[in-house]
Image (cartoon, rainbow, N blue to C red):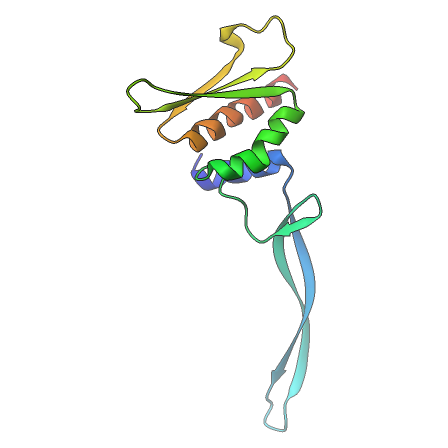
Length: 137
């Protein structure tokens, strides 16, 4: 999955919905005798999140700020926590997702992902969570 597809998958998981907004467009065209008007309906696609329109999606993969604003609250809402660890040699970041209030959670139950970028590590870990939840249903 490329970065754009992953970003869209995360956005939809966080509650963004793609919508089309119709608007009327009037163009003046010339027919050689003063012209005429052509009216048509055009659509502007946008992403809706909680009633607010966004012309483009936040770049989760490239921005930890966007992840904190949109993805972490969704994780918390679903009962998941998150930790970041940086490798001793500073070569990569590890993101660990864990379920709150589950006393039987072991280290094997955690979702882990490594990357040189902390935002990407978080996004990949959340993608695993999304896929795991889809497989459960």
